[in-house]
Length: 259
Image (cartoon, rainbow, N blue to C red):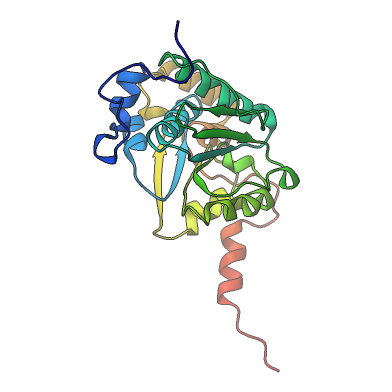
């Protein structure tokens, strides 16, 4: 009978830094997941700050779940936090991570404190949070933070989450399809500086999505929605009277008022 407190014996069984498994090999050998080239690129990234701007149905939550499990499995006693716009979406992320964890022979269980959580044999935890500013506070020493569907998470939630990274100098990854030229996801993508590693994956680059399906979607959705959902474009959402670039340029070029 498989017990909770043992991973299957393999070359990944030791916990020393020299023996930490490559994350892609971990995905293949321990989780039974074969990543494509772009998924492997994201998995292997060691960026402290990363933004994944990707098409719908590419598998970003699965890839992020593997990244979270690898961090938790290879670093005993760490905390990984996953935030999403809603509790339901965070729950879906945790369920994907549970399925992946179960494939290793480990019986998933919660940490006994948080309703959306996974506790690993080495004491590491993955905790899912809803996108509400008043309910995400209270965590600290976060090793890895993943914000899923980040373009739909309110700015105040993002600002409440970031201090959790301070003590451990944790890593932060934002994952999303664009949702207009607004919010921290867009601002960090366009103006966040060199500390952010940016990765774009369009539907036309994903071999699992048929060209015929994409053409059908373009005709059904129209170009604007298609470019946002499948081509990862930050399109104007129609809610602003003036385009964002026009307003920004006007503010930057304005002469200071004399006193």
